Image 1 (tube, rainbow, N blue to C red):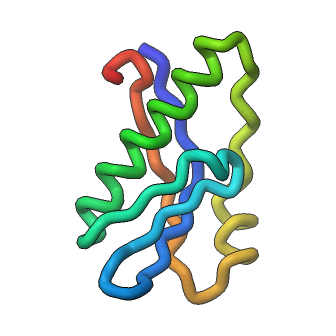
Image 2: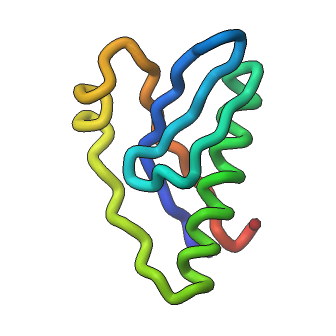
Length: 87
């Protein structure tokens, strides 16, 4: 079991909730609801990290949640946690 946690920024825009990972910009996604956005965020995070690890790239260190929240005032910032072995 390899559980990882990264902060994500959830921003409502045009009827969608956009999800960005400051530490992994290639893992961006979106959803129509917060629940859907979180599920897609988990999937995007897992796929991105598994791809990096599969190509023998190091996963970046996760930024502190408070630091990411301070850099994105007005947005919802939450940790996204996944077990990479499940994806």
